[in-house]
Length: 353
Image (cartoon, rainbow, N blue to C red; front, top):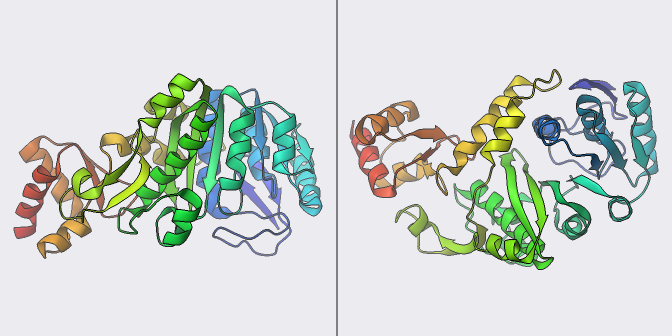
């Protein structure tokens, strides 16, 4: 089967495309991650790294697109020999000059110097994180895609404790929690190596979380970064409609860099879908406050129905001069630059109406 994505034409050996996190099979292609790859290509074009590694090749679509659409020197690592044959076919089909290595990710990343390492495995990033942090160039970037959402959202609490050393509640705020737990773990592992991270983009989509971080050396900066990690109670951070339950440790700093996002969105690139750049442009709104107001929870708290969000946003603006944004973490959530008491007062007004 031949599919087109970006400016590339890719052969995949299966007769049908299967959505979701996928399995380890020859030439695996995930259509659900087009957004992931679009945003990666835009950021690579904005950040201008010299050497990019696609650490888990599959069909080679990610590395091929980065090479073809940004001109960045790219290497693809793939341990499966038959998948390497698929990647080689796709490399020739797309006429890109990149290197293909039939070796494990750990082998390639430890012998070559990269300033952008992309880690997109099947499941957790945990087995691959330390080697990526160890070998990425100072001031370089790591892209990480995690599909172990059951652990990161707390729906498998024993796995959450075992893998991430944390406790989190599996509630309607779980996907922001999951991103913050992932970043907390990454920042702690980096700090153990006297390294500091800055999240550039972070988002949830379907079955995966995606974050791209900048990594810099320095024990002092690493110590400063650890100040962004602590246990929290949603009762205190959001409001008393949530129980007094300590969760974490979680990343409490920014999830996105507005400067990097804006620079990436300005890239004029024919291969990137307009809706991908539109989605990317909304991500800095997630840093308006830590956690969003989940209107489904407030409606349940008051015993009312969920109001129309546009009407609620307008009432917040008229009464408080507030600015509100929809959050991608929930279809019924709002990021608003007010506190719980102010939000509850306006919510009660519209709930009565």
